[in-house]
Image (tube, rainbow, N blue to C red; front, side, top):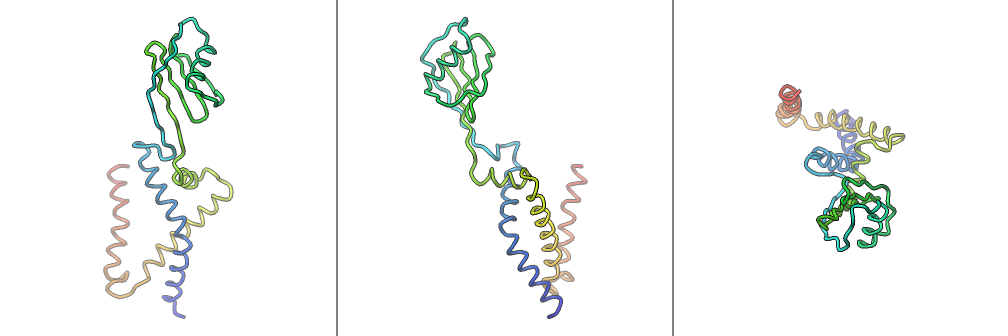
Amino acid sequence: MNWRKWNNVLHRDIGYLAVGLTLIYSISGIAVNHVNEWNPNYNITKDTVAIASSADSSETNESLIAKLQNEFNIADTLKNSFRSAPLKIQLFFEKKTITADFEKRSAIVEVVSNKPILRESNFLHLNAPKKLWTYVADAFAVSLILLAITGMFMLKGKNGLSGRGKWFVIAGFIIPVAFLIIYF
């Protein structure tokens, strides 16, 4: 078997192995690239609701908290609270925040939920697990290097590296270098 046949076999088999990780890393990469525009891990919904009960500025934090928990039928465990003014209080729960203004008799209820698949993909992409996953990610990086190298030698002739392929390889280097010159 000649070297080109081995090259193609290696490229094919590594390519098949890399499909799942490539999809996870690329989808997560797109999500994380736009972190300034949206939260790639969580959906956050905000609703403004009316508060039926009234309050007095002399009431204790515990009293205001109890009123809100009763009114909104909240069974979740309170993690913390913050009273920014006599009639304003924030309640913090596991995946929910309530910002209440008894003077305006309204509250903003903010609920956080996971974005399925994206959150898990981002967890892996950003190497949050550490430990063994670091070696899996390193092996994937090596496989991408091998795919790039073997991919250059898949074809020969006018469509191979000595033909039009060289222009694509050159463009592949020019693009990141140009962005480094512009932005770095």
